[in-house]
Length: 457
Image (cartoon, rainbow, N blue to C red):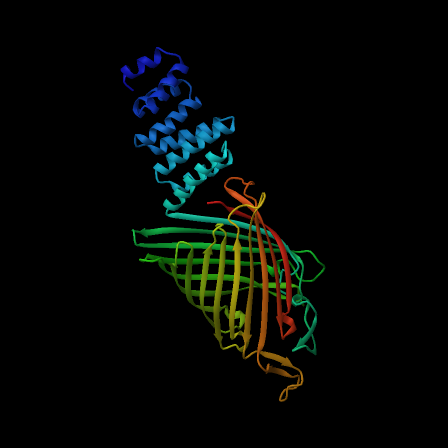
């Protein structure tokens, strides 16, 4: 620093020097502000106010990393929420200037946690959303924990019946409904490696882990119901005159447990899916939009499972409409089919669902609700018949008309907008599902109510 700049600082108190530096910063003279702050910090390395001036001035002079480090140090020295808020926002701004958007998001989450009022909170949320849109990296994290009456999708009764007539067979303990707790962790990250006004391409990695804690007396172990999914995807989006066109190619690995009720041991099994999907989004009006989708998927099971390859196709349509109240209505339709060398895997299905989301909180909570129905038919389904001719102990025979399942579901999502920590908001989700089938093994009822934690941006 030149002597001419240093001399005025030496002729005044530290408090006066801070005031002059701040005035220089606000007057558009970041170089002078930074010089004065440096002199103070040479004598008082932990002078918080001077660190804040460095955090604000250095990015303007082409050194945002220096500003970010100064802002982080000012945060550590802050003693009140107001001071922390100021330091966090300056640190986030410096990180964004350096195009370190993930770090900027982290500091904006810190700022949200100590925002002094609703206006500043909304300002920080807006900044966080802008950073998220700019950031080529996009990451998501969510967690849920829910008690359930049926964590394994088991049957309600151990007596096996077909078309309502008992067969004399019994369903094993691991095929019956088991109560317990289910926890689910979802984590994903996506990198946008190409973008221009009309095109965008990204690669993504996602993970889902499910763990179960059984709460009733059974020989089935918690480990037997553990599943893990890892998915790698490549996506391309193109902006059209009306809406967008997207193409996704993904490869996923599913790991599950093959449980042996006799030995009470479970072996790890897996299958892989390769999926190609196309979606088209259209704006019908300022209130209505529709999304069309189609996909083709191949499922390859591990050699030890002895399950043939499965090919699945699906088409769908999703319609949304915004009411005068700004509440949102959604309707989803889906049609699918699956083909395989295994007759019991061949199926056709149709589903419809309706959702309603309230725009404004109702009291202290936000609400959305949904209902749905799915009809599945397995036309070539084989069942065990102990009286089947041509075998000593009976055998598998086709079920006349195939197997038919009807599933009806309902859900309610409750959010708590006034409760938030570090940019994450808690919620409660309640689910109920009932499946009717002409094969009693697949007649199930499930009710769960769980805690969720999701990011607000």
